Amino acid sequence: MASYLIENANILKEKYLDKASLLIKNNRIVSVSKSCRKLTVMKMDANKFIMTPSHIIYDSGLPLSQPFQDMKNYFTANYLLKGCTALMTAATVRYENELAACLKNLRTSLLNSPVDMIVAVKIPPELLTPTFIRKCKKERIPAIFVEINREKDISLLPWGWIREAMFPYNSPLIPVFSEEAPRKRNRLKDTWKQIMLEEKIPAIDEEISVNEPISQHVLAKIGIYPLKSYLNAGGELSYNLYWKSREIQNIEESSLYHHHNHRLAVTVHRGTVIRAGADVLFRPGFGEHVTIKTPSFFAAP
Image (cartoon, rainbow, N blue to C red; front, side, top):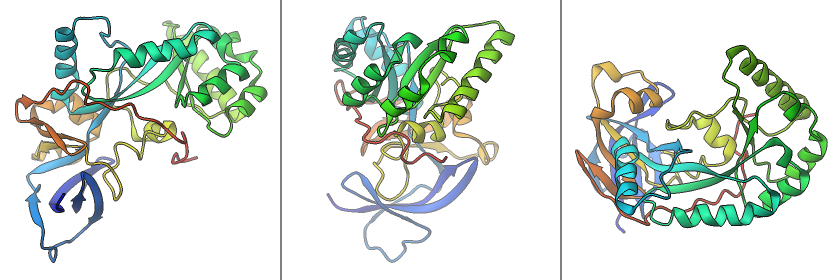
C-alpha cells in the first residue's frame, strides 16, 4: 500500500494540542514529525480537526445473550457512534476449575464484535491464590478484577505468595468495591491502596469507571498501551477526528467523549474508516482479540 501523509494534525496530548504530521504506510504510523513538506506522497490536511486516539472502553454490561440485531444496535450506539474501537470486559469466574470454560464462552460470545476486545477476569477475593494466578498467566489474562466487600477479604490473603506467582507477567489487580456507604467504601479503598503499596503488588489504585474511556495511565498499566491508543511511530492507525472550535482548545479526552460527541466527524479503526459524519460501518467479526504480551511494561512507576 502506498504511503500517505496526514499533515497539520492537532493531536490531543494531556489537555494540549500538539501540531504534527503523520506518515502512514500499511495502516500503521511510520513517523510523526513537525514538518514533512519535502515528502512527495499523497497528503491529507487535518488542520480543521482535533485528533485523538480512538477510545477504549471498559464494559461490564455487554448484551451477549441478545439477538444479533440488538447487539448490532448496542455496538453502533455505544461504540461506533462514539469513536470507540476497542473494549475491555471481564469473564466472571467463581471457581478455579471454571476459568478456561468461562473465557471460552465469553470469547465465543464476542465473535461478531465490530471492535477489538481485551478479555480480563473478575473474581471473588478467595479465588486470588497462587494456583489461580498461574492459570491466568498461562491464559495471558492482562488484568484481574477483584470484588471486595470487607476489609478482611483482602487483609488476610497470602500476598507474598501471590506476588511471586504474578511474576513476571504481572497482570495488575483492579478493585471492584461493592460497598455503597461512602465512609465504608473509602475505608476499603484506603486499605486496598495500603496493602498494594506495602506488598508491592502490581495494581490499579482506583476502580475503573464503566462505559467511559480508560485513561492512558491505566491502559499502560494493563499493557494495552502502546499496542492501542498510540499515535506515535509504530502505532496502529486508529483515531478520531473532532471538528475544532474555540471551546475545545484545552480539554481532556474524556470530556470530548462525554460532552462533544456531536463534533465527532471521523473514526478510523486499523486503517478503515468506520464513521464518516453520521454514517457508520458495522462489520460483524472485524474486531480482534488483543493479546497482551507484557502488562505494566510501559507503565510509569
